[in-house]
Image (cartoon, rainbow over all chains, first blue to last red; front, side, top):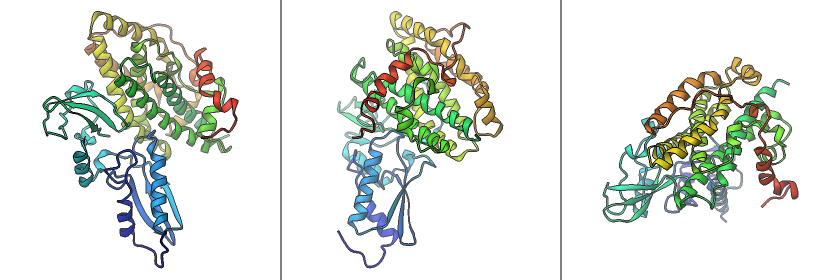
Length: 169
Length: 251
């Protein structure tokens, strides 16, 4: 653990947080995921506001713990984590870097922007999801949910590989 | 007590998600296919997550130091405020899906209304939950269409489930003094006003599913006021066992 002589800047803290991986999808950081909403000094106390992805996501408490640990290792002693529900998290907040990392990792990033309105009755009418392996859009949904609440399961009908799709929320 | 109707109202919101989430979690390891097992339990996870938000807020409003866990695990059946619909058994897969469609279509509209609540905490939990419920509603609607407009057998089973659960949909739209007290303050949503849009949505789905809307019949009521069917006691016996047998156990 480091000992700090001066308080680090907010920019430095963002850089540190960008090195904290998401516990479920370690290829992207908690910053890429858009769950760190605000970082700021309140006198000598550092306040970090985070927002949950899905209400019941079991990773939420792990993420809070990881963030706290990472900052303490950097020498931050007075720290407060706050949960912020509003505005609700959306996949629109995934950074471009995050989207690229997801695709490279084999997870298709979200296609539909949530501002499009309510879901259609039949999922099949939705926009095709691009295969992260071969780029084909001839893909088929296998399941509306995958290994975590934020993903669905797809299969590519060209390269025949199955893949996870990071759903829009 | 000024906060009493608000506490009641929040218990209703929280208990619906908690009890339906528990029912859905009973499918874990029993789903008809692996993908459905995952989907049903993920919907359960969302609903239980939302219930945690509602019940923590309820505990905060009550001001006696109870949190979501204490409200979930240490209340008896008569103190639960969930709708009768959500405590109905899973039945066959069609029953689970019919129950889900009725609930999702209603909850979606309710949450949409609650995003405009003058209580900012209610509005933000509603906005958060609405996005998840949008996906649930699309999923249950799609299943009703797939099974209704499927084989003769799946059609008949889906129609049976839609008919069997119809009698539990009445209380979704019946206001009582709790609703009325909060309506005046702009905190709650008038359940009467949800009926038209709910029916309209349901008719759209059922038509596509080649299923018939059930005929008007006697409606069961009482869940919102704590008068439950025999099912709730069994659910609580299962859900609360650990905390009752080993008080304050944590892991």
